Amino acid sequence: MRDYFHPMNKHILKFDCNNDIEKIRFNHYIMRKVNKNKMNGDLPSGYFSITRRSASVDLNLAKSSVDKLVKYFEETEIIELVENGTRKNKCSVYRYLIPENLKTQNKPKIETIDATIKLREFKDFNDVIKTEDNPIGETSNEPSKKDNINTYIKIYTSVIGYLNNKAKKNFKPNTKKTMSLIRARLNEGFVEEEFFKVIDTKCKQWLNTNMEKFLRPETLFSNKFEGYLNEEYIQKDNLDNIEPWSVEFEF
Image (tube, rainbow, N blue to C red; front, top):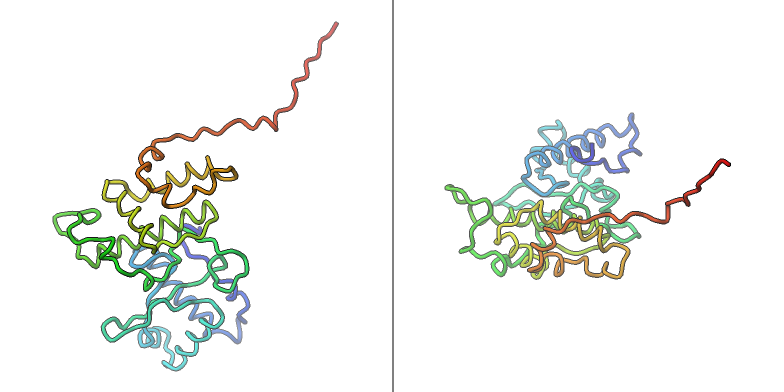
């Protein structure tokens, strides 16, 4: 079910069914938003937008109560603020946190295919995305530059998240070099699923070998990308598990 519904934060299990009704309702409310977004793809997976006013109306709570709930959920590391609402865009954007992306964990952070980079950290798109480039999925109704940028953000975060998860790395999807490499391959006509295939192939070949250090964007998404894509990885037989063949003869 993980592919369809976002996992629940473990702190929710500590809520008391009698005394924490508002917290349980609020968690259900924001998880509905997360999963609705997961289906619609309006934001990276795990993210949701909210306004205090709409939450107050939907939950039949005072705005001050909603403020307290939001503050509590942030302090308890159930949600994390990504973008604060402005006059132009009244919605605030949050990320719903699960164990693999909690910021206080001591173990190394392992990115997942779910977008784990804050939207505000993507800067200077003009250096990577040029207006004269053909937009992804161009149709007769050409998308706006803003829509085009949002499309690339989702691809950068998805591809690098997949690489981090498979190779147990911690690359950032918003570095100029990484964005440029992925962008170049997209301009050549490759699609997101082909990035996943290359990552799968090279991880099977290189993980736990002296080539593991090359499981990185500058190697995988370079001009050798098409060659990697057309490789077929053949699993070698595990000879260690083969038992000696014992032949018995009857005399």
